[in-house]
Length: 469
Image (cartoon, rainbow, N blue to C red; front, side, top):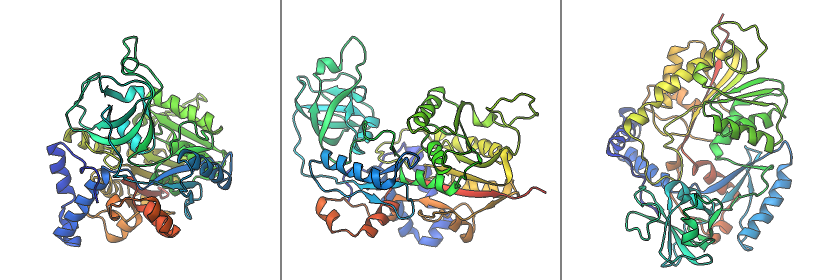
């Protein structure tokens, strides 16, 4: 049962998505009512956080068993003795799963309010405290130490510094204000640091602020699957084309036992800095990060220099990951998606330009994995159909591990081709809350099954480049 309203789109985007999820192939296969039910279920799921927090263990530095023990102790401390299990995944042996308790419907609401921006609100729903830059408004007389109720301004209509807000706001839980109103909105410049320490969040997830930073990486489950599907081997040369902030980059390096070379590129300089920081924090030395646009990464002429970075000669890489820039509609929680239809449809041509470069940079016999965190056909299955038609040298390949569902109908792919794809579809499970009693009564296998399905929306395709001769 939904606790939050369904995700809201601009009218033109909603119309576009409705056509996508009522396409003829899908209606023929499922029937009109079933297709509609799945679509409505998806919209409800997208506004709620996933049922589990997923953390990837940096196995380069520590064993999963050791980190699991430390994490369990940390969660017990944070949850004041509440016994929430830390689960190991049977197919993804470098991740740990923590069930999310909630939504908690019986929380008292206080008269003192703190309004936060949408992105800050989504972070709170996934376990974060409230930091000062995320605060938009507070009640008039908020002081440090006050009990406050925290709300998210999901439509972005609250004016900074307002003393009250009557617009659309979503209750996120309660906490203790660390600062007074005058300190939060100080004229001497934006403050940093903790603004509200969440004590009763609607969804109870552990906070990972400074928790085992070199041993853990907070990452969505499908994002971990991607690196395993690429399956990099020690000594190989790997390209991560759109790499920031470096979660998959560092995972690839870890899977290679830090032996070989992982080239990470991104066209935003600050994000490249973040990749380097993450590599250093996780003590991975085989990563080389470059501020560079992937579309320009192919060198048209042979270079005489010994420069390590891009652009690169054709057939330079054993494996390539293209985790493409996308419309991001699979991200959860998201209650109000603000992009226009023009923005949503701008990604397909960009992805094709990047994909074309990736094919040329890949060695014959090499592996190319394409992934997105979105739910559209145009950025997912349609891209696969286009790639197979445009590049005869490419062949779809089975994925291991295969944890998500098969691809979605509507792009003209055969049933066999759809089975080779992985689409993580949150609507595959009934939206359900989890309290401590139902958690204690659940079998571990059922919890793992829930974690596999009730995650973000995501898509993965794996290609092999055949010998071009």
